Amino acid sequence: MPLSSLDLHGIADFIRSGACKSIVVLTGAGVSTGAGIPDFRSPGGMYDSLRPELLTATAAQRRQMSDDPTAVVYRDLFFANQFPYLEVRRPFILGTQEQRWKATLSHWFMKFLDEDGLLTRLYTQNIDGMDYQTGITRDRVCAVHGSIARVNCEACGVEMPQDEFCDRVRRQIKDIYN
Image 1 (tube, rainbow, N blue to C red):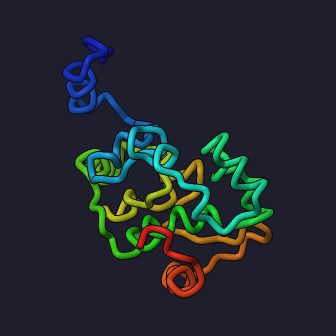
Image 2 (image 1 turned 180 degrees about the vertical axis):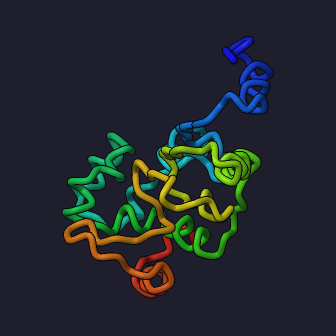
Image 3 (image 1 turned 135 degrees about the horizontal axis):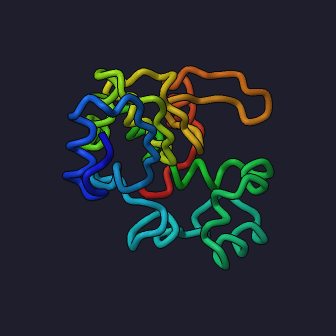
């Protein structure tokens, strides 16, 4: 059965028809902003609210982040100094562990596709790990930018239990917001 139209109704009809056998989904910030997680780029988001003067960084690193707030997530800055990223993301890291934000309807839709045997792969740009809250099959999820739900060493790839990582963040990473 070909799609009757490319709008929501046409796609829904196709999925329900039984002719649809495989679905691949690509998600981004929009599926998580409904849960209350601000995206990086919107007003009030991480780049908009970045205050480099509060971060544990060299003067040159602070200038770089002042000139370009996206620098706080640059890989080269992270390898040189993990503190700016971890300090900025501390509330998010700990909030994710506490499940402060709940999976949205979009997350649950992908879980239902998975249960029905239709979801081939979910490519997510989100690092919040909320896909996993639904119990979605982990092998179907490709976290393009990684996931806070799984913590691995950037250098060697060894996994660390999330609870242990969060305990270290609580003890060793400065809270710049309080």
